[in-house]
Length: 445
Image (cartoon, rainbow, N blue to C red; front, side, top):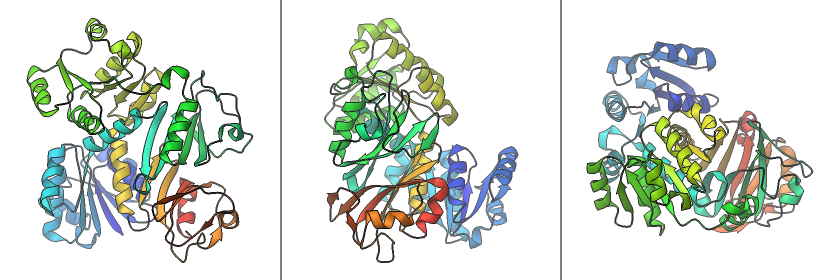
């Protein structure tokens, strides 16, 4: 396809980098420095200008473009860009928006705003938060195969029982595949005798019940108790949607919002959430409200700096686990280094969702790992695949070493992937693949 990406920020750059190997990509941005950086770093055409302008779109070749992705940080700009593109082309349009109200309107009226597919950053982030809260020690959780399969990434603390064990000793759950380790920021494909060290991250793929059991085995003893008391700090759109999702899952979270009017709105819209109006940077207030007894504290204000401060305060008074929203992706590692348990970047979640959609048909779902060093992807096996009608032991020899078959589902049943398992056409397979061999793998599966 020929794809125009409008916006060369964190979301747009990640999307362009993911698509450039298999598509002709053009990027538009008003920042000339970002345009120059992309021109040199990626094999793409970069255009300096306003993507919402018809003349800029025409300069980028909108009339011969198959897909336009509007991914700037401004909702209205993205919607106008898609609408403008539709006036002069048949390009499939994708818009990134923060405000979930736009998504609600779009869902109720097909083709609204000239948008063919819409992604709500805030809603995606809330979903990520809700998933992570439910798994002790997890820093990343994604569902596959309609929820029959789960991928999870776990931070291994120094006090975890599995520190010093080999992969073979740790990998003892029948419906679980040990996919990879992340060590010093690098994804590695371990062997059975590879020793797990403190601060490693372990990536597993399997049936959700097995992933849950694995999480309890790797988490420190104090983190294994069931999550009940959840506190959300910040009544932002992300905070609101997080509370709403948790209510739908049977939780009754507490939410702290400083602005009195916003607190009243949230109290009316969230019937099963206890909304408190106060400044969450007040340590005395946190102690008075027993935040020290909280199983999880989610910092979801509109400020990265405030989210960091709140998370560290909550941790300091005794909260068991902290999750912080981090808008600037390069800060995520810093947050976790100084003591925040999980840092969730909305832009990363958005880029992942858009890339997944652009590959729909060939790939049904995907998750990007450690800055795109690897991908977890789901696809349906067809007759031409080298996997079809063969045992895993036989077919895996024709795939690169940096590939792990993580899970198989067949007619909505989970199939444990073992060496003698025969994969059939129509099966859904979840693979863990190093990004640098992805194009070779996609050519044969």
